[in-house]
Image (cartoon, rainbow, N blue to C red; front, side):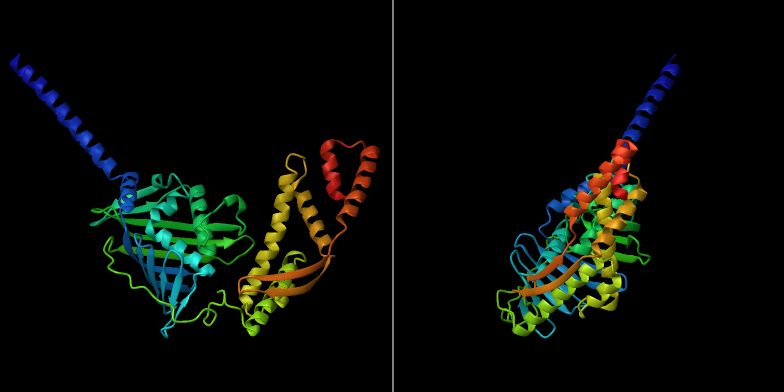
Length: 411
């Protein structure tokens, strides 16, 4: 009897020990899950008030390397760009650039200021950049442990990867953080997307981020390959950022978009180039003429840029009309082939219009008004004629409702 009780007690103890081991194992696995590690990283980054970031950004054959020092408390940052051989000092209301010759110029009123402040914002808390685009971002990783870091590899679905990669590519192309796939005007398709995060096992702060994206534009055969590698160090221990002070007067340096007036020579140049670009744009869109764009485009554009821009504008204009028309006629029974025929007919009709560049007036290098005179279509007359033909067909052929829409397109 005593032996049986001993065996029973041993069995109970074994079960309790086993249960304790399983519970401990579950806790250990949970603590090292990708989601838990990323949540701890998110919390850790909320306590960061300064950081240094070294970067290596590749865009096809072009590579940019440098270092970015960010002080969140004083709202100032300092960037060195190796390939450009310049330093950039950014505050909450100005951007100062120091060139290799020692000249320092203010660029605070330029589009570059917005681009760089966006880059700094991402550098402050990179995880926030991703989670703002995908609320379930932390759920989509595999994890492995190295000596000092957790290595997390993105393993989202194909649909998730496409969306996130498009949002990142959109920011890289435009500098604009807001992204809506429904109005993806660049028509980008993602061919490959890889994302890897290294998180320090002790501090749960990011050691590095690396992503690779290969994409191409619709109706284009060539691909664009990008790679970004950012490495983080000296959290909350960056030392003092030495500010830059402008020694080039407004309007006398490379930045001509200050309040100072443009020189007559620059004014004529900006007006001439703006007028040429508008004329080229009309050729590519209204007339669907790539060669016309290339012929009219400003001389400052390279031959490759002219070709790429011409094809992009031509295709975007046509695609936009086609998609809008298809959306407006959804549920009417109109076929995709009929929409395509209507698009071609519309563009052919637009090709009969005439235009003239009347004037171009530049107030700054960024603000140029180009005036265009256009002899357009008599759309009211076209609609009236179409309605007359459609009514005759409706009476004579006893058409159904879905047939009316198709007939209207044919007219």
